[in-house]
Amino acid sequence: TADTHRGLLTAHNLDGKRNWQIDYGAEWEGNQPGTRCCPAVDDGRVFILSGHGLLVCCDVTNGDVIWQKDVAKESGGETPACGFAESLLLDGGNVICTPGGEDAALVALNKKTGDVVWTTKGFSEQSAYCSPILVERGGLRLVVTLTVQSLVGVDASNGMVVWKTPFDETEKLQNHSVSPVYSDGLIYATSGHRKGGQMYALAEDGRSVSLKWGDEILNTLHGGLVFVDGYVYGSNTTHRWVCLRASDGNVMYRASGVGMGSIIYADGNLYCYGEKGNLGLVRAKPDAYEEVSRYKITVGEGQHWAHPVISDGR
Image 1 (tube, rainbow, N blue to C red):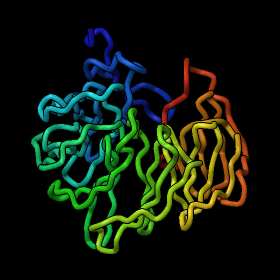
Image 2: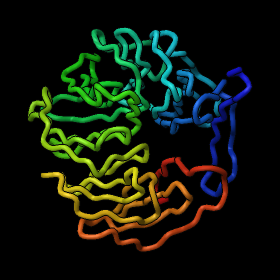
Image 3: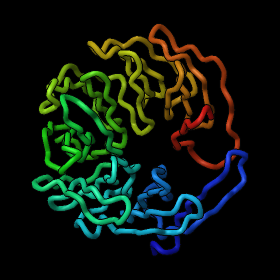
Image 4: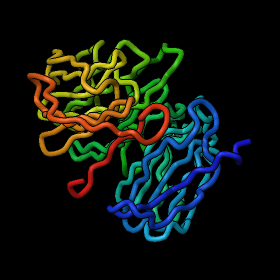
């Protein structure tokens, strides 16, 4: 039963000592069992979403549960085949997630109380493992994400759908676990279960999108993307690291590197974390995959599918 597999939330200090650990409830036991969410921290609280759709808010100092809400059950959302797998978006006083319910594909809850602030009335598509992002354009603040069949932009203040465009409508396996990336009026979205990605131009007022170009190379499966100085970087399903030019989709390079994995960016460098445990430091430049150094992470079992996090120079 679901209660035999428990989820643990742990806080460590920066020398690795455990400060506290709590059992936040049943975790996913289906396809690819385990937790599938990065904690989000803000204003003395930490927020997580379980694979079963339970949203938990805890005190960041000791792990005490402040409130919790079964957003999947309350919205009538159908659990995806691999469970709910998104990291929550914090926006001002709200915490935003994608339970995929009736008139509630996305919902915003008050981060202090858990009360519903808004739902996406008229938009009911199922969740597809994607973590939403926040985009500001033309005075609008948009929550942008991928659902089962759409790339969608939602007004962050009230949950109204400002625009949506079809994405993978005819695919049998809609696995959209890579957050779209945005820079200077451009949104790139991709999926490892389609031919590749698509670059969209976001209108100056933020109220519409148009397809700029399509790509069949950077079909990132679940490792994330970064948008740096007019180029998009990530890995693809052929285990290559790829750089695309945002203006036209031109492939700048393809390199084996540390193998398919996840990516983050800071201070001119890419941190590429291959699923076999190699973490590579790579210069963020479009002319070549220049690996400065790499480190082998030897602990753990199975694939290394977590996403690294950068904070305060670490």
